[in-house]
Length: 169
Image 1 (tube, rainbow, N blue to C red):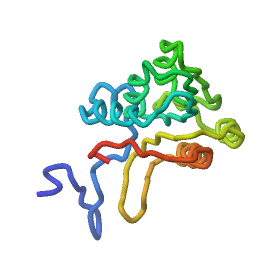
Image 2: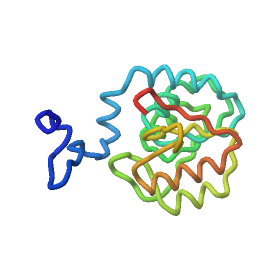
Image 3: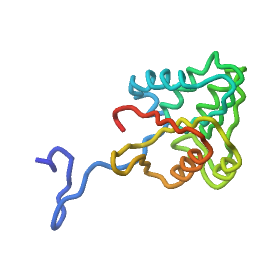
């Protein structure tokens, strides 16, 4: 039954998952965005105060947060996501800093040693972090080591880390 419903594929001595663990492009995830993400983005933006320095990780939920920063004054926002930077470019009262590095095309973000090195000298009030998954035992999870390294560097730069994730995580 599981094989007929494309959940498992039978192999000699057992079965393997038929579900491909492929990353979906940022734009595809944005089009199929969970309505929870808009609400989470709004709620997270309520924790941002004028004069703060914050990091927005690359994710569709953090992008929703960026949309809700209109009206914040004297705010510095650091990100590695091209879509988030595009939103910030339209909010003149926000000083926006783009972390340079190697472009990860699927996620439309920068990764690599240039990003982690830049983060090592930055100190911020808050980091808003997105993740691929969350487990009560393992904690935050992600499929790609290059993004994990950037997320770890972001967390080290921040006094406070705030997870923004919908129920699918």
